[in-house]
Image (cartoon, rainbow over the protein chains, first blue to last red):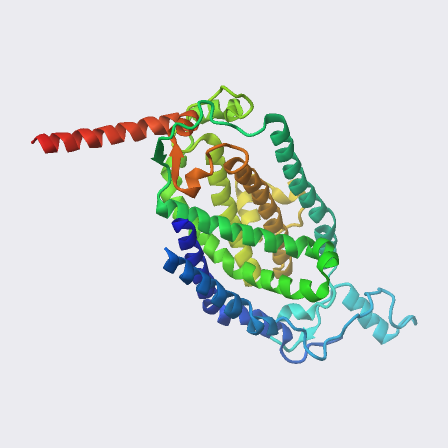
Length: 43
Length: 375
């Protein structure tokens, strides 16, 4: 039980770290996809 | 102990809110001016008149011709991709069908095994004497992997089959937020799984080097089909070694392909892998009908997605068997990861060489202590 609870604590800490640590990089593809005007045909 | 539980509960609550709460939901909404329910692409529309410039433009778009874009994402210059449609048909068709058959087949096999063999009992019964099999750190790493793998498996399967299975059952008002939570969580829980995998690898790799006696264990399937056959094994038997290497290699492969899906279009793992294999005489495209490398950034993503799904379902099937034999399938097995101590009769039947090592280590420690006491 002690090991299981410890694993939950580590899991929560790692997930929080990844959530906030990766945020600046995860935002980039979305910014590329939705930025500005899109396509001009026939050029 | 209770303090530990309280900390875990608080962390989980904070995690649910901050990692997957409203802030996480904002980025996936389509822009307000997004086109909805657009008509499917038609090679002949619009402009049925031959020579109509609009019709020519449309034909070029439909044929995957690259236009000009003023945004950083150059891939947007190709509006319609033939290979994208082909990938979608493979993914939503045969791929998901085969993976579902694999999962269903494994569940049926385990059910059949239980019906035919029943629970594997300790032949000599519980002795009442327990020896330590896994210490706190080993069990923590195992449960870190286990909990995160279950979350990753459920959230991944929801991506593939949720719309077909779960949506009709719970309705879109619940399915939407649940899927968003699972999908967002999938990104971050993967790192916890990798941490557990790294710790386990360091702790157990020395015990999982294949040996000749593993062939004997495999040749009689570990004695699982006989009530009196107990092939000798050290700390891990051949079946557990397969689980160890399957989890390690599969986990790393899932992490690499998942990383490429998390940061799309930045990597060319499949081009690099196919070219590397070809340099040693393995022509993967010819063998499995893949296109020729180098692959476009979009094709890389398509292969990553298919590979991620195939390896994940392979691992889920393997882990289902592991969970079965570690719980209802075998008497006394769960204690190894539950309390960390197993009954000595169970250990003698399934890991006889490990018990001998354990006992001999304990005896030499006792002898040493006795000699020191006697001076």
